[in-house]
Length: 199
Image: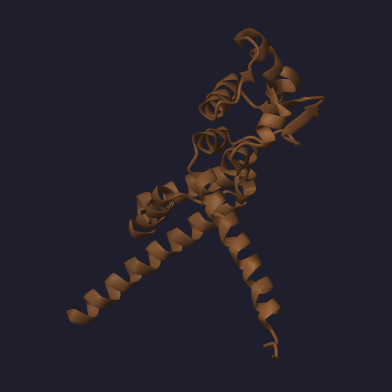
């Protein structure tokens, strides 16, 4: 009996695809979690590394007492007992080094390692985009187009907002706001040309 060449390769090539799809699905679920949304709202760099192992305990670093309670609640939903310091102690820990400190939630390392991978990914996922790389939101884009479409008040509004972005180091937002403003100007010119053509 002859063997068909390439069967092993096909099987091995399918495994990375499956793993990649699993990682993408897990990442999407993590981005929808309450912990991820909380860290996104904070907009400050998370502690690194976010976990610290000490004997049979694993300590999870949190930026605020509210985040620590949220992490503890998510862990306890999976029957993982979490130890959280009292509120005053957590507040003092988080205010260290000019409010750049953190507090810790302690759990059993073994129980945490056996937990659902999505839960661990949600707890450990570190979301942070530096101010200069944060994109412009939709409302600001529409405002930029509107400023370009209304010449005099729009130019003053554009200068004020654009300068504010540059002074605060938000270079990406400044570039995208300028593009939105120019798109509004182009739309205004197009309307004028069409109007003159029809007349």
